Length: 606
Image (cartoon, rainbow, N blue to C red; front, top):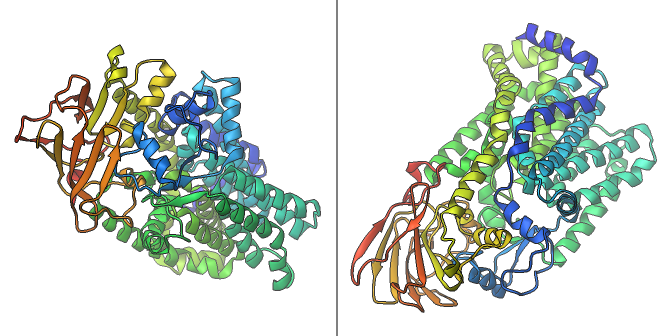
């Protein structure tokens, strides 16, 4: 392996100090995403950014395109009335994020090229290139201009296939913008502290503020600033910590304003607020942190955990914890000897804390992935040099297994990742087409405007919620009422109680997957007898699982079940198809609604 590393070092030498070339490489790898089109949240953003009126005629809530639920029960009911939220949504749900700078880039898209999604994707790729160039500058300032370690780190970050996910989904551009601004804020701070560049004292907090206004994920910047003060800055410890005050004052001001204006998350499974839900966050941290590190160092598509059942997820988390222990064993000698390695390790470790507030996905990894690139680059550079102390620590003293593990990590990042990146860039396109097929399976005749559409089963929210917005954009008919009764791969038994009442039994309970838990987290159980009243529909929970998830509910409709103005749909194979309610007293079984990417093992999971 050493010969290959020496040869790679030679190839990189001419471009080691050219961060823009590494940014261009990242753009090239992710370029297949240019044809991905719009998917998921893009469909909602399009409706708002084109200036379409609210579907129910009421004013939009303030906060921008990333601000959905504001903890107002009346607002939750309003969204449920138009089919934008399922009936089991927590009345106090808050999913409201303030990202005005990121939203500004989307407004620019719709002002200049509203009908050209490929240009929107190109816009995202430009930000990806800037993010990688910024990370390359961080590596150069940390590891030394022209050094093999800095070149290796820039290359590892540029070809990291996990960056393709946030760059190939337009709605996730905020993750790339946030990280880009954060890296340049760190660079300005470092130039101020180590080079005496006085402008950096003002520019660093200004860029930190910009990063926070692009996305709340910028709080990870402060992890890297702390690591800088401990391992890279010079002078007395008190002066190093005092130097953090300008940026931290910006962060505190932002936090107080953000919370004071009602932004943040509460009541959702994927999104957690450590301050208001500390127990749920602590439990999630134990599971999510190892998975994120596994995804950063080895697993190309950490989003795959969304497809796992509870037992499979626990097993993978345990395996990920063992993998993290192996990483600690491998890099321990390097961390003892090299302050730069400790800088990268601590910056990445502290970055995990805010990232664990949401489900593990590739789009949350750009901050942590620089830690992996930095530590791995130092190890590879020292192994290539064959220097006695470092080489003994990483390879010789740790034996053959250390070399094997180091080679495995290098192969995963430098060979497997770049080969998979183009395919990963197409994932958004494939998922978007699946949603488009689902939207096409809804009725389209003009009479739909007077009818109710009842979706008895669907794989998840994105197979139902976009319909009103898609139809409003197309100018086509949309239903008078849209009522999803269940979401997720759950077997259902449906019994007709009378002309207006249908009882559904959800085997294993609803809210089994992260996407359905978006609307009600595990920490907010439902009770037997709990009722939800919507226009033309009353729902009563008649049974729950041991952990408080609804396992049976009675749905009483204003219209008769066989009224011709009620359109019944249920998921079958890969689309929604017409469904007929059973006869009085009859019980029928509805197969689990699985998306094409959902394993069969997920169906009916308790």
